[in-house]
Image 1 (cartoon, rainbow, N blue to C red):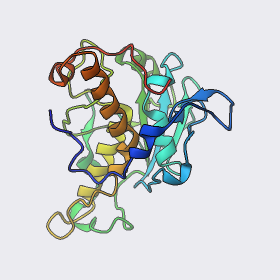
Image 2: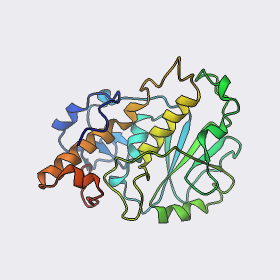
Image 3: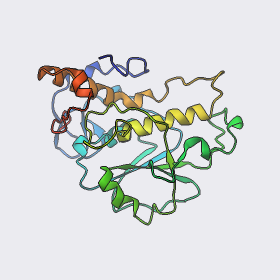
Image 4: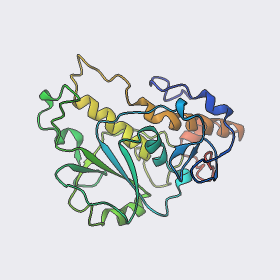
Amino acid sequence: MENPFSSLKIDDSSFLHDQERQYCQCCGKSRMYLCYTCNVPVHDSLKTPKLKLPCQFDIIKHPREYMGKSTSPQAVILAPEECTLHTYPKIPLYDSNKTLLLYPGQEAKPLSFFFIDKAKNIDPDNNDSSFNRVVVIDATWRQAQSILKHKALNELQMVKLSEHRTNYWRFHKDNPSTCLSTIEAIYYFCVEHFQLTHDPLNTPYDGRYDNLLFYFAFFHQKMRELVQTKGKSFQAFMARESLSDVSITK
């Protein structure tokens, strides 16, 4: 099976292959690649790409969501100025006029709905969209239902993405392949945002947000290698063969 990230502009992560377990300088716990408790890399941070995103992202995680299997820390590490992690039920109050809730509910509208005049939005520094912050839920579908009932989210308008097939290896049995991981959802949101704020003929998407998948693509490759080591085909793996008990960041 072909590498789904081969066409993206992602920095070289080959140095991670030689990474050994290290103690996090913040909490002292033994970690591999990154510390999902402190949201910091445990390798040379100078080799970690840093991104500037088009808006703020508040990630709300369920307390029962095991962070060793979550992609949320990747977002905080790669875009620390725009990505913030909160644990339910401690959720800040938001300005409902400037904040969207990224969730595919029945009332969710496509991202294009929230731009006042697409024709004007050809300059990313002249954003005529009606929002500057997006709330993302990091939880199972069942856990998300509890989070959605929180008073801080009740008044927020829901936004949904175009359909994208996930490349995440940790899936839930009854979920369709369009259920994205947190880092994938943020990535595709940023790409769609770019496409809505630029003239597609004069300024096509240039890959500026591809490094959001820096760790994700690396872990995907590692998982692919693990699958093949077990004597299984990667095609079967991508056909939703569960590897939810395997952790490569633990």
